[in-house]
Every structure is written in C-alpha cells, then in structure tokens.
Image 1 (tube, rainbow, N blue to C red):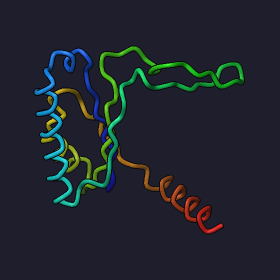
Image 2: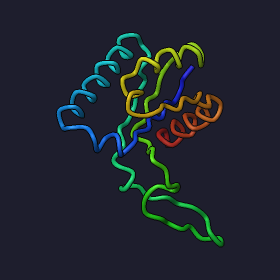
Image 3: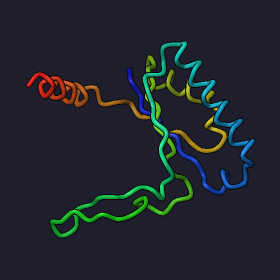
Length: 130
C-alpha cells in the first residue's frame, strides 16, 4: 500500500536552531530516507518552500479568490511530502516513527486513494498517447 506522509514543522522551533543544528537535522532526515530507500519503502517525496511562499485558492461568490500564504493560522506548517510503500497503516506508522523529522514536528500519514490514482494514471497515459 502507498501512504502519503505530510511532515509538519514549527517555525518557532526552527528559529531556535543554529545553522549547524539545522544541517545536522537535515542530514539525519536524509540518512533515514536512504534507509527507507534501501528497504524499498521510499517511493518519492518533495520538500516545500516556506508557507509564506504559498497561495491559497478558494471559491467565493462564484469566483476563484487567491490569498497569499496558508489558508489557516497555525504554528505548524507542512514542510514536505514523503510517499511511502508499506504493508498497512501499522507498518507505515512503525517506519515513520523512526524518522528524525518527528523531532521537529508531526507527520500526518494517509493511505493513498488507489482507485482515484488509477483513474489519474489512465488519463495521463491516454494524454501521452494522443
């Protein structure tokens, strides 16, 4: 099964860390990602720029409204996405509980929607063949 792991971070905690501490944390995270790769569990992932670089779209009065920044005011922001292959949710929890990123913020783990993703893949393949 595929799981999407959303890694959050707390700006306040990050601001308290030195450049050296941040570099060490990143190296620990990358090293664990390598462990996941070796085990065949790392499918992919993306680090995200700071939430201040985001825009939020929502429909208002029949028009798309664009707001700078994240939609909600919160201390924790999404910092990255990791796509994980695991037997089941408990296996995904066991794998991600060892990730060093948990020290600086929570991970939300959700099963990928295989049915909808199959439809997306079929449409992608159809578009590429046209």
